[in-house]
Length: 560
Image (tube, rainbow, N blue to C red; front, top):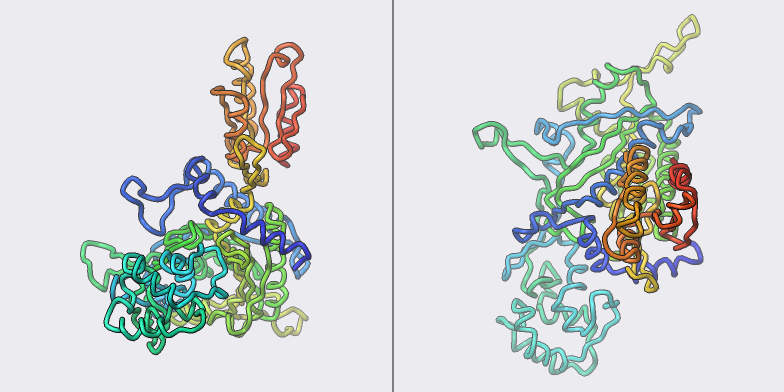
């Protein structure tokens, strides 16, 4: 961690997710799904600007990974990195998920409140309690405050139960059968009580399997039980177990089951990768933090196949390159970190591999901590072996490598047949968009908009805006012609806005909130000397350039 890390932490904590979400709604970046019907928890729709921002990030990944092969970078073997794409179905044969272990083991420990019946992930309960309205009110703090060190007087807590508790947390044990004992404990307290201990006293759950009360109502939580995260449906007309199918919880398995098809139908050889972007679905019980933890989300995944002897080198290659890729898109400060997993954190398929690391971003809702943005894991040969066994293909799924093996009498290798090991860089596209939004969000009280979105030019959903200063004197005609020329040249990379309504200051403010990097204004001087005013979003600097030089100017600034 660098010396300015505390500053980065403070900056992340200063940014309000409520303000970011409000801007996303106001400027057409992200909407609550089914909003006119009250919404649906864990699902989000992207508006005009959000859809373009998401496409730009997806296209950047696709271009740099698939089309450019890690931007032409040479791999550990001294050769260009080869990646080919696939696009596989969301619904596959259910045996795919049995082989991968998702049917039997893709679950989270869950708890249900016996009073309000709400369901919670057991490992999320302490964090949810720290942000729950009744705990914050009891402690007289907000959810952003550090609550571990807060002390509450027993008498004050008793007063709270009488005045507010019954409405904010009606499920607490203090209002049920153990009220007398709990009240006596509070009255006899001679010293302030730590908040975490007070929560347990009020819930009277210290001796129970769940030490915490319900974050919603304070009621008693059941013992944790396993809950499978996969959505299921049925194919055909009969809704029975034989026709039961699952929505994919990850895009990776579609790649593994097509490994042999790709090898047989293309001229690729190990080492090589298969890439895919697409939707995945997980029935998260407590989706939260805007789009960070959703039930429908999009992934950008690579499964890179290599010889078992080379896994450590390729793991290090992908770990380092993926970190640099995110840094190149504007996440270059101390809000981004690379963290290697401890051995006890590794997934079942990575236990014997080179390891797993996460690229993590310090979101406002995780600060001072971090949230996962992308994982890079050595999956070993676990998945291919599982599918070889469950499909009955056995050794037919092995790869034949003519460049390896014992040497024949003529000095040439006899070849080797093996299950390749797999390095998996798996990124969340929606989480990537969220990180870009949080990083770009820049409060600036001196601007009319009070905030601007400092998007990397490559990702900006609006690449440029063209304004006629006034709606007369031929200015709209010149501006519209310039807009059309820019659309032809740059429209494939993002929108070119045209706006002639309201004052020029208000138009600049709208573009600041939308993250448009450059605004070109047609004014009276344009009609006399053929120059336009260009305004820089980040510096607010304005300069005049030739009207016929606008395209080249924009191309240079956008790096196109």
